[in-house]
Image 1: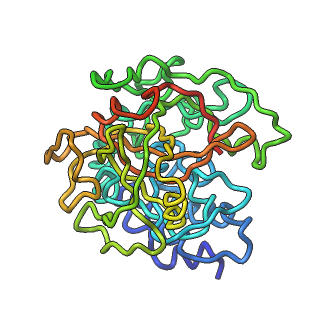
Image 2: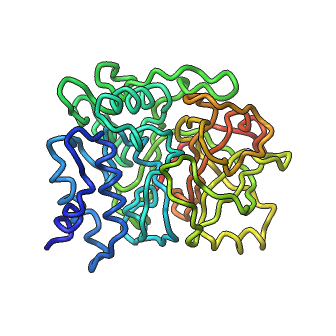
Length: 356
């Protein structure tokens, strides 16, 4: 049996009424838990998995992530200690060896909503109202480099409706169709939509040019500190097993807990050798505060809420800068909205980023 047929034999893609995102999550979770004879075949084999889902899952993919709900797909987390896979970008699960999944802390959106109807309501509303980055492939600066391009109808189609970004809200200035309002406690996310052109010496890039994401984002610096906290946001999440991972607290300029980031355990040694180092985090999207279990950063001094859809946190990515002027993903976590004003140094700034 081929790898694709072995994975599909375990039925990660269930009944046709399942949410499209749930089908994708289950497929990736099963797929990344297996070993490949040839690591370079990572995406080729996964294409076979996706092909079996074509009736419900019709969208372009970019390095394994669906174009139509790209912001959601970026929020994967490792379930074990993972290592970098050469030739693939760090922002994609394909760029790492080891199993990944989407946790309940993603938002409680597609992870647990059982039907396409609820998925359409929850996932699409979140993409339209709670995301803001215009994702582009690095290269020539034109609309053809958009990750999701409404003019090409690169979207998930389930009858008359779209899952994720909305074509009926799209314009040439706002192709992803977002309607997010200005955050009164932070940056105006409607003030910058397109990144300014950046030119990098392509001869120094270790990856193919289209593996790099080019975008504008809000960046802020914080310190980190290892904790004994666990990551379990809902009753359907498995019991927390560290498995080579550590929940680090994100600390503001007052050394107060402001969020968390999930990192490899090797960061314990990095921290112990330089505990006063400040690290860079970029804001990806809004995160729902609610959870039914103990939160890993519950000791923060900011507003708390137990409403089901109170988006008072951000999904954040911790990044490191490479010598050729690009950045890489280090880990993913969450930051409280109000903590943005308490960042270290110059505070939060809009930044042009090429992420590989």
